[in-house]
Image 1 (cartoon, rainbow, N blue to C red):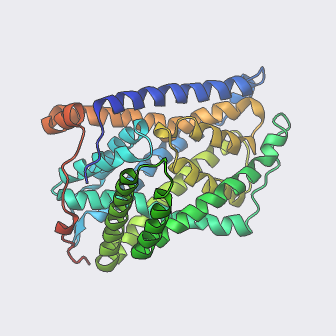
Image 2 (tube, one colour):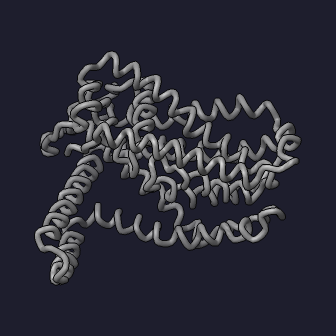
Image 3 (tube, rainbow, N blue to C red):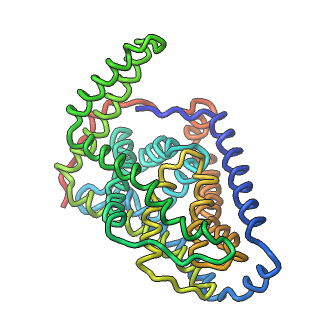
Length: 374
């Protein structure tokens, strides 16, 4: 399946990402910064600066290990660890300027294809990279049921900090339901398709909706259900342990994300209950993962504004959000720019694809051959 990403889409996405990110950060800084900000900032323990940089580094290596594991045939991988990390950084750059993870499908599939993987297998691995985190989000269900996520909050923000965990609970419920529905779709695609057909037929009776448009939507949904379910089951049957290992690396990458935010708190001398701080971030993760803005701009900042408001005094909340965004987004994006710029100059086909065509060639998923692995 080709995913069209035009040059204008990239340009618009970049502008939206920049303006929304800057706007959100400036708004948060203006709201939280006061005469005590500088003195409180000087209290930040400098030892945590290299700690944060190291955590940011291993976070992307762990994320890259997903591609390293999934590209293995036998005991050897087609994608080295450093190349896999670079592919993730380049794909993350495109995902930051194209909303809803669309950018990662084309970019990752193409870059994996360059590493001697077929287009079909590259696309399948990329699809699985988006599916597996959904299974990891199932941990949010016991968190919602059993773990208390309320924190004391700070005096300046008052009710906001104290009610933030309630917002997460309310918002996480429909997210959890959607995740469960998506997983059911992977296991029982035919039943879901029958249900969708019934809904579409009922919807088609509404006079002001054109029946042909409904049929096209239905066809598109069925196509996506078939492909996602086919890919998932094919790997589950023949490479079950590979999926488990790859999921483990994604989980570790997410976990390091959470530790980075907690390390920022430690840098300011705040030591929250570890379970509490982790539980809140587990609930946050699906919200920012499925963010509809490029790179989650605005959504990422304000969700972690709420997180830091649970523990920190107001003058340093905005600075903490900025540090967190630098570690997880802005610095990786700059590195991704450098890597993609180098790729551009070495690969004329990539240059032609992004600048002129903006679409990967379609391929038949039935042509994927999954070899047995150790």
